[in-house]
Amino acid sequence: MKKFYIITNHAKDAGFVVTGQIAEFLESHGAVCSCRKGGAASGESRREAEQEVIPPDTDCVIVLGGDGTLMRAAYDVHGMGIPLIGINLGTLGYLAEVERPSIYPALDCLLKDQFQVERRMMLHGAVYHEDKLVHEDIALNDIVIGRSGALHVMSLYNYVNGNYLNYYRGDGVIIASPTGSTGYSLSAGGPLISPDAALFLMTPLCAHTLNTRSIILPAENRITVRIGAGRDDTVENAMAYFDGGRKTPMVTDDRIEITRSEYDTLIVKIRNDSFLETLKRKMSDI
Image 1 (cartoon, one colour):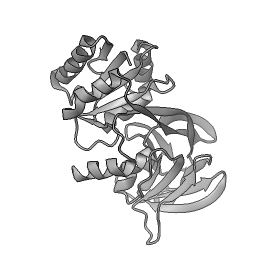
Image 2 (cartoon, rainbow, N blue to C red; image 1 turned 60 degrees about the vertical axis):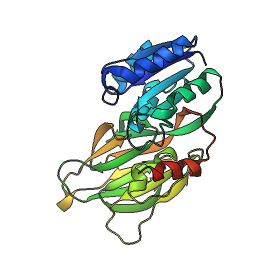
Image 3 (spheres, rainbow, N blue to C red; image 1 turned 180 degrees about the vertical axis):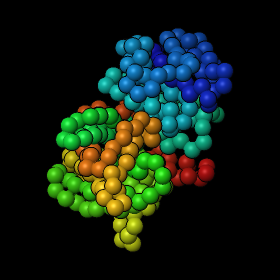
């Protein structure tokens, strides 16, 4: 690799000190490096702006921050076929593999082409209101359908390939990718799944039942979640969250259809650790 682009979470790298050090190191070793500094727009406009400035022949995007920063970067560059490597400047980071003490050895590996690239499946969500498509988005970790406004229990009807699956009454439901199994779904009691798998993980949020468990489904399926009526048949106000950031409102009888995205996220892996070894190392840091 010789051509790099750096995306930095300015809140995690005050004054872009680490960013500058990385750029200087790469350029001193004959590489070409450009950086995005400062804030950016949100949503689709941010992605379009990012793709306009990233050189199309970039070999790798280096992401400084944490898992949240890397997920936003995955959205920004999806469809470009450029692999990402995360440098963890936050706390716990499953996606951001490289820790501060290992930055320069990791950069050496990139320059010497000593790495592997993992392909991570992404999710695609399409929101329908009165049977009309009103919003589409993708996610690397998860799509969460939850309540909007004051705390209350909501009703959700779930279908697979058009066939009724089950009914949740609770705080919401998480549809996660294998990558997302270590995120919100894990906190909600969901299982851990190797990130190289291809499947969906459906985890209810605080469901009002004693026997509700996560459900694992093949990635070829289409999962539909329909918003039920509110209390006393009032209109329910809900929200669909994509990777915990981008969101779109939903109301009673709206539905979201979740399928595997046509895009994958490419993650550069320096260490040869297995998923279980990485999990053990990361969990021991908590």
